[in-house]
Length: 426
Image 1 (cartoon, rainbow, N blue to C red):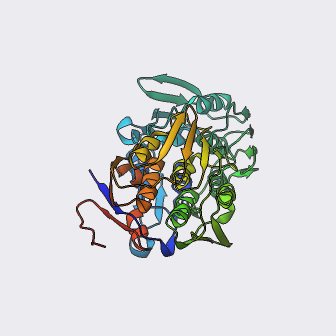
Image 2: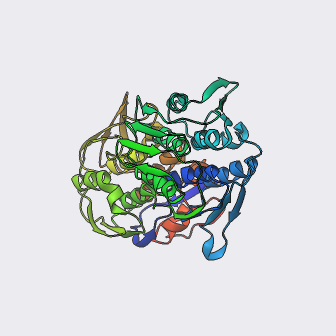
Image 3: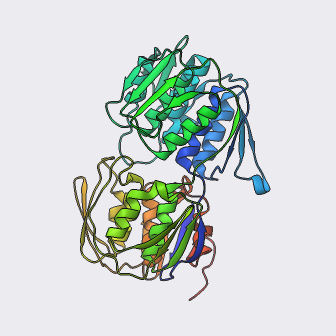
């Protein structure tokens, strides 16, 4: 099992480039199920969840062609025939996004059998909002033996009001509604950029969608969709992780190839914490020459502070002067990284959904364990400023969502390698 070995103390200097957004690429790959023509997706990140989705689509009968060389971040998917509209547990047990194929399979094939999702151990991820929405569209659904089975002659447009904001639920039902008969109005929708990116792809395929990126989305169903070419948006969470890395290490880092408009809540909070940044059309420069100061933070649905940046922000808070209170409002079990940070010398107390972080604690190297995708990113950040050599185990979690993170960080001065390589002495 891979480990990362990191020796702290180096400021990050230079330019680091952001990959395509995993959380945008996954629903866009699922959207290829809606047509029998090729869908070409560009700026696809090379991460584990993408590879799992490729295998999943291929198992259903899709032709999945990978690009090579300069085109290595391009994938062509053609779902000409779908002989097996099923997502098996063996394929999706490591990935929560498996439910994204439920809506498009029912819409295209009239039936689907999808394993309940796996992924990170950060709290329950109820599928009931997907099920309620599909039932509103006329599908019949049953749950047994860890699978959801759905069937419909043809889905019919309806009004869907989400009881709770759900990103994957919004995306799943958006795809289903694209081929439903008549108009679907979805209310209390997720407003994330990834939802808008999916709608952009679907409209290029011939769908009629208005309002994506707002809380109300209207979909006029069409009889069929066609193939197209689409470029995935940049990964705002990867960008945010690197921005915090630059600030933490006292570096001067240009985070290139991102969209600063997607980072508003994070950049505002970092400014409150004393981080200096300058923005360009497609990048953020972070200068870590100012002292960090404590700033309370609450995670919220977009456009609020993202839950996927909470763990990384906690790493920053350990080095800020004063006490920061971090409140997690999205997932109920997303503080598992805190205990590992404490092992490195952080002063953190968990009080239910709140973490109280007493800052400016000197961190020292330790052997730590990654419990989920973003937790592993927070441990990498902490290790970059810890005294000594930190070993992070179970880094397959970080490989689910960060493309070659050690290569990117090494390119801007970090001393980081996979276990088995020898780090040069300082």
